[in-house]
Length: 206
Image (cartoon, rainbow, N blue to C red):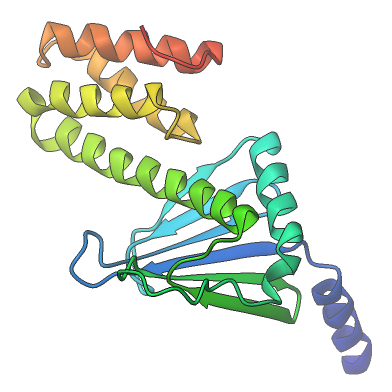
């Protein structure tokens, strides 16, 4: 019985969907460390410390996850070096790791000239920017009602530059502003317009 159970666990691990782990360590920056785990179905977790007890969970679109995993395939699932070898400034040490069941392979680099790796890194930088905007907006909505308008403006600007992903996670915060008269009218109106844009699947807020 024990052997059969072990066999089932082994099979389950062997056929587990792949996921991508990304981290960036850059002492002196904010945050100094971050990591993102992206599952094949688009579910993701963002942390600003390996032992972060308040991770942020969000969801990417299927098309976004498909593109990211396709790029990971183009760089051979991180089996080959990506570091350029050029003498450049410290841009933060990036780590990508492909995890599939018990199989893992990873690569670290400061700067790469590989175009597919650059595109993949940009996706994870978008996720990072998104969650930092989420943290800023959540903080202002909860603790700084007068400052909420500024946080919403900054969020809107990033959204219009196409630097954000997983926008549905912002809807509860935006709706909270819209429905609460203690926020500035301009903040409530702007939050309503952005929420409508997200719900309609448009690219930019009015």
